[in-house]
Image (cartoon, rainbow, N blue to C red; front, side, top):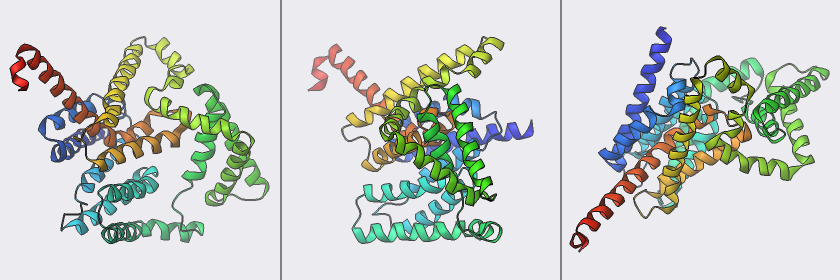
Length: 346
C-alpha cells in the first residue's frame, strides 16, 4: 500500500506541474482545464494505482516540458534552462527509455521553432547534447564495463521488431501478442545458434529480422504506421481483445470505464486537433512539439496502441487541448452575447 499511495501522490504532483506550465504560457483558466484533463484522463487514473514506472516518468516528462519554457532566444538565463532540461531528460531516460531519443528530438524542435539566430540555435543544442551525454555517462560507463558497449539500450531494435513489425502483421491485439512472441522467439533462436547471449549483441538479430520482414511487404508496414496514428487515439484493437472480454465477464462494471475511455479520448482528440485551425493563440513551438510527440509515440507503438505510450505523449497534448477548449468556450460565449445584443460586437 505505501508504494501505491506514493504513486498517487506523484500523479497529483504531475497534475500540479502541468498546471504551472500551462499557466505560464496560456493563463489561469487554461491551467485549470489542463489540470482537469490530466486528473480525469482514464489512463492517468488507472496507472496511478499500478506500480509501473509510467507515473514517475509522467512527472519527469512534465518537468521536462516546464524546463523547455526557459530555453527562449530572449531569455538571458537560457544556459541554466538547457542544463536543467538535460538533467531532467537524463532522469527520464533512466525511468523510461523512450525519453532517451525523444528528448533530443523535442529539444531540437523546440529550439528551431523559437526561430533564434543559427548561431544561438547551434550553441543551445550543442550545449544540451554535451551536458546530456555527461549526465548519461555513468550509465554508459557501466554498460561498457559489463557489456562492452557504451550503448544504453536495445529498445530501438526491440520496438521495431516486437511493436512495429508485430502490430503490422496482426489486425487485432490477441493475434499481435502471438506474432510478437513468434518474432522474438525466432530472433533469440538465431542468436543462440550463433552462441550469442548478451542482450546488446542480440539486438542486431532483432534488427536483421525486422528488416527481413519489412522488406517482404514494405507498403503493409507503412500503412500500419499510418493506422497506428488512429489506434493511438482510439485504440479499437484493444477494445476487441480477449483480455477485455474476460475482464468484462468477471466484472461487468469495467464496461463503464471502457466507454468513459473512448468518450474522453474522442473529446481530447477533437480539442487537440483544433491546433491545426488555431489563429495565433498557440505559439509555434508548442504546436510543433505537440505534433512531433503524437507522431513519435504513435509510430513507436503502431497498431498495438498500448495506453502507456499515450501517457508518454500526454504532457505535450494536454496544454494544447486545454487552450483550444478555452478558446472554443470564449467563441461560444461571444457568439451568444452577440445574438443577445448585436451592438456588443461594434
